[in-house]
Image (cartoon, rainbow, N blue to C red; front, side, top):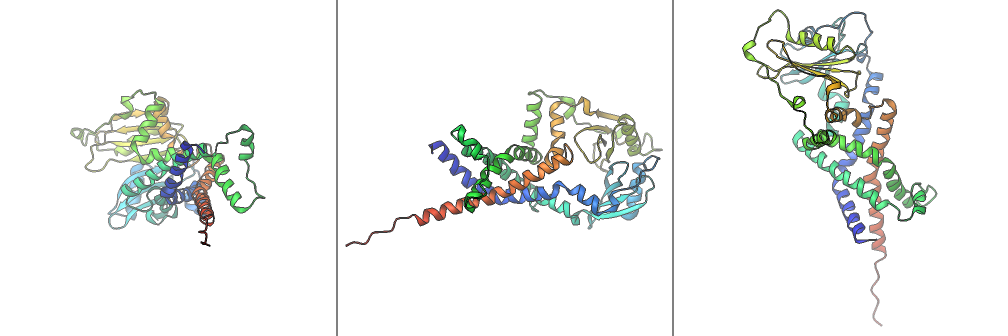
Length: 379
């Protein structure tokens, strides 16, 4: 083995030890989270409603119905998830935490109240993102571990790559009839090779959510170094225009405008500015229900309702489109069920790599111990 490969093997081994447990946890929770929508739809009837031939309730109505459940709460987001799905208000309640209030978007009928902290899949997501640690600490630990994992994937391919072309075909198959240690070795190398490209996509999209510099790097790379000032411009509401039109709720006008100008949208998120915030009311219109890639975004002055910024999907730069694609790529829903199955299998293989790698190291360590020469007795 060349000195380069020896150095690569040393780094591969010890960096694997450092990141292995975190990679295992993140990969297992990723496997569980991939099918969370399908599982919850099958288990909970409140996630579906009967389609009716009438308009949705306005955001102000959804807000008031949610506050009937929690009068002391503050509604920070209202979501319309599709014509066959409920409207959901996210309510922050003093001493009770954050709750999701589900209701029929056509009639306002109360369907379900969910404590976010007790939802199994949200807990799984928090483990995946933060290891249940404080977000600033957990995000850093997970992010650094996944950065190491990216290096391990690349170094693993370098170490595995056969010198001779004739050996490549043999290196792409698992020898199931061999001894278990050989099977474990093949599982680590062969499955790692097959999953490498998908694993890199999952890792890089995850890193872009953990680190701003990765997200910006993707943005500038896809834009070939060009900047698009309007996309990143920050708009503020004008407090001098307060109560210019008190007869109608600003969030209702914002939602109606977005629905009119994005007729193809199936899902809407309405975010109202906080009492002290200078930002505006934002409405994001997603082209497909439960998917986040294609979206049109609108920001309105929270005092006057004036449109401050509109950014349809068709006018977004390649870099912004790439970043908008991150979540759908990361959870495998970009191409529907097929890509979800691929993401699930890739995550499962990623979870196995630290385990099979540790077994390989353990076997070599024991082998070296048994091969130590015994001291000869003096005659």
